[in-house]
Image 1 (spheres, rainbow, N blue to C red):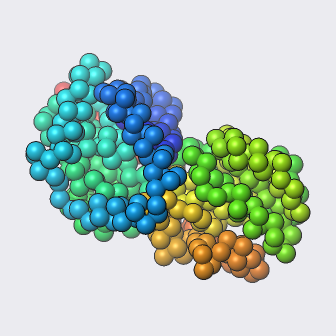
Image 2 (image 1 turned 135 degrees about the vertical axis):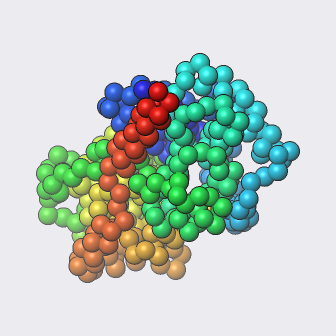
Image 3 (image 1 turned 30 degrees about the vertical axis):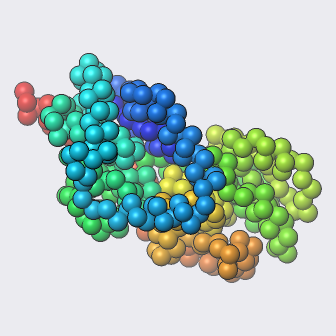
Length: 378
């Protein structure tokens, strides 16, 4: 059995989801190919899209980004056949189909709405009979999902997104609310004291994990200053990710509290087990990982659009705190640690929404559907 994972380079989250799915398929004996759909067809356009996303996320006025997203997300029906969206998608689908006809995958999973549109076009033209699925990688339904009506399944982080999916005109019978696929280590738990010993932390001290987004944005230096000024006694792990400049800046900084500064790490799962709460931008992947760990969140600096809506989802369902200008980070941390029972209340509520082993559930489901289709044909 063969699986094809199609992503698009806008941030690292879509690739991370693809990697989690590919690793799960391979552990099941399914041969897996992972590909950036735009890069395969037009590397220059792929690079332009990736750079454009990074620049807009870091520098575009927040009001402008928010208005643009809100305008796009209101669309509920597919574009016309001669629209730029449809013409572009058919061009990409035609070119990508050359690879699909040669490789003949039994399963195609798309971790970005743009790759999902391409595969939807391919299914509409009967260019492939593979079992197809598109993964919604945030706790909201992004713009353009209305263009994907011909794929077989939609993977969502929660059944609570059914309302938005239906409003987009999508068939809710196709929805698989398995959760966002994440690495399996986030579905496992290490004892808190053991995790703190492994990281060289004080086992008896309240512990906070502060982590920036995959692109290194999020005003993490300002957050450290606010935490350091708090009267609460605590220790803080700070993950700067790929932001080397921020890492160097914080390593030089003198703090009153204990701050352990990290660059890129591949053991965030262990750090989550050691922490009492996480302070982070509300990206879909990081949020899913924290939920799977049962870790209370304080959300900061969301990118306007999908991350703002992630924050609203978490806040409205009582599974996280949201630091704003009128409820700043230091006040959110103070309120959370002032009443320790609140941490436990959050953990209990998180248990209602956490989706563990999403990748395994999805891969087993799709593999079974592919087997059933093959059996029916034979």
